Amino acid sequence: MINPIEVDVNGDLERAFKNLKKKMAFEGVFKELKRRRYYEKPSAQKKRKQEEAERRRVKKMRRMVIHPQPKKIMTTRPYSRGMQSTGENRNPNPLNKTHVDQPKTDE
Image (cartoon, rainbow, N blue to C red; front, side, top):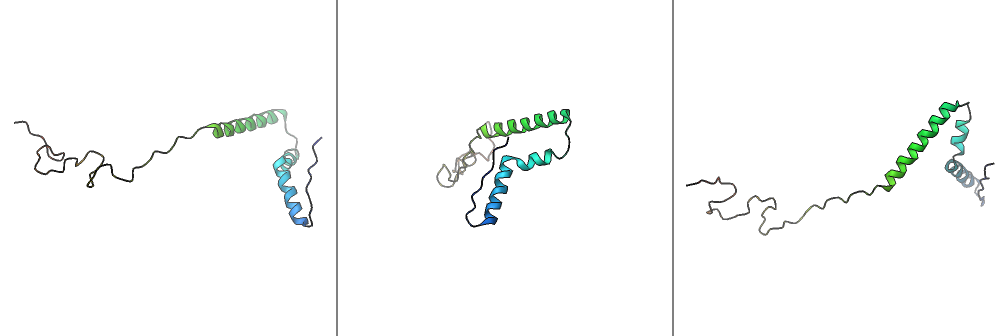
């Protein structure tokens, strides 16, 4: 026996009817009525129940997964005077021969 669904009617019949439909949908009454309109073979019933169980299992696993924290993006530059943090242009002295942009020559 299904438990009765009760809704309070406080003067607004339309609101009460809307709440009743919402409760019935949540309880699965509409899904059950739709399913019982036609005969369902036992093999089809078994397959449907397995698919529903799989859907519930996947949903539960999705809720349990801990999502990794997004990487923080540096908005400020770590070096002074506008130098890049990637290593390029770390030596601002143009007279220095070991500048990143100039090739080294062995003499």
